[in-house]
Image (cartoon, rainbow, N blue to C red; front, side, top):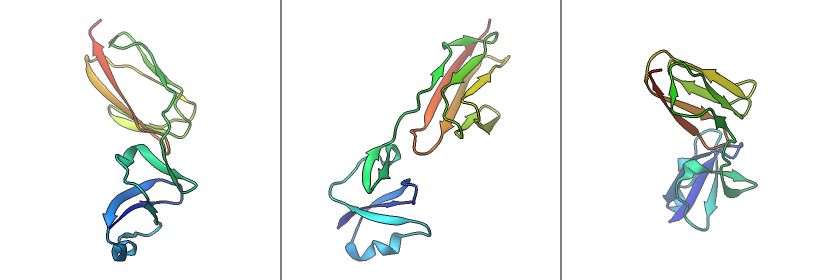
Length: 131
């Protein structure tokens, strides 16, 4: 059995498997490449390939306004890499200037997710209280 990582040309890992040598090619999907690993890896969601080496994904250097916040405050998320997709309550956008502002009139907990390969996905839980 061999530890094999399947990945795209960008280095994004699509799957990691322990497979029989004769089955490696059978698991390839269109656009994928494969590489045998000398040691098993854990949590491929935090890794990608650079020059055929498995490395940790970098963190985004985002900053957010102080939480918790009230319904009178505006949440500002800055340092978002340009091109990242921000999923927010009610929709999603592609960030084109590195910053997003959001507010609400309803107290509650709101989850924001920021995604852009090769970065780790960022999740922000914004607790909003009455004024």
